[in-house]
Image (tube, rainbow, N blue to C red; front, side, top):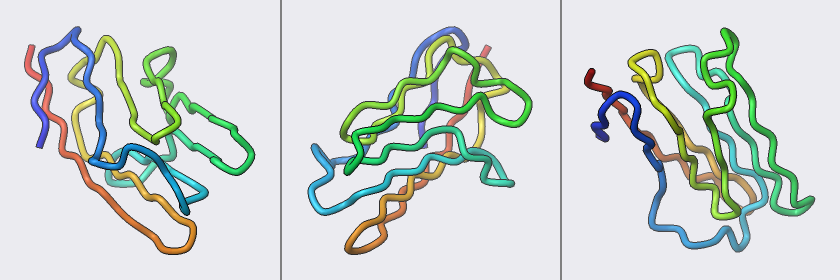
Length: 101
């Protein structure tokens, strides 16, 4: 669980400092698991998505370790985030983010 104040930034990261044998990192949001970010390590590509309703426009940053940062967060960004890393094996991390006004 992660708690943050509205207007702040939050970094969702794990203890992984790099993705060695893992090739793809996907970040999803909400009950529908909408794709919001993708890292393809092999191709060195990062894709950021606004979400189906545009709520993440210009707010996301994804680094080469797969850590996701949400800037200028609002209450509409509260919810469940899931990070799935795949390659030789699949690893999932879940973050419940709450935002106070």
